[in-house]
Amino acid sequence: MTESQRIQSLFTDLYHGHPWLDVTLQDTLRQITPSQANQRPIKDGNTIWEIVNHIIAWRQNVLKRVQGEVIQTPANNYIEKIEDASDDAWRQTLDALETTQKEWLYFLGTFNESHFGNEYPVNKLTYYQHIHGIIQHDAYHLGQIVLLAKMVK
Image 1 (cartoon, rainbow, N blue to C red):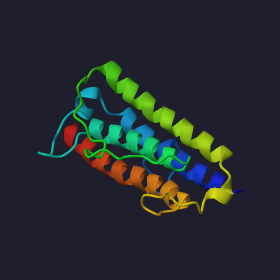
Image 2 (image 1 turned 90 degrees about the horizontal axis):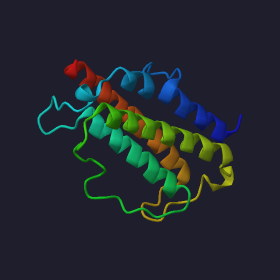
Image 3 (image 1 turned 30 degrees about the vertical axis):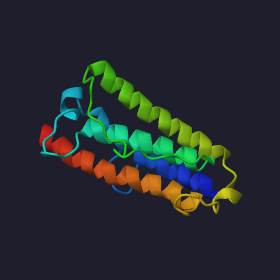
Image 4 (image 1 turned 60 degrees about the vertical axis):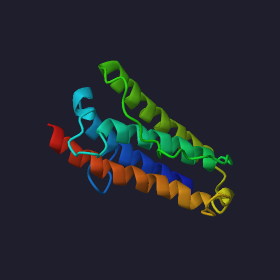
């Protein structure tokens, strides 16, 4: 198995497989209604929905970085209030997350592993560090989502 295939496996497990931490993004989010996703149980904290959009945007950001694009991260760090809290909008959000999953798996399936050591010029971290970093980012926010889901039930 190549390193890219091992990383694909990590992405897959955390999204909808059998990760060591025993919760997945897809299974967790599937149980959350749009109303629950839009609740703010912690004053000045983020909603589940805001966190999911943040995950999506960072997945897109890092994917562009490891494809050679220099990205300007917005001052709001991809945290924006939800304007449309409809069932359809929640489905669109979950579909967008699924799309980023497919994009990452495709990228890793076609990635030239000799580029793992390439550095992103803004922060000097390698592509390898960025790729593992986005998995860590997903796991970090999944923990927040699990906790918030317990608070909005």
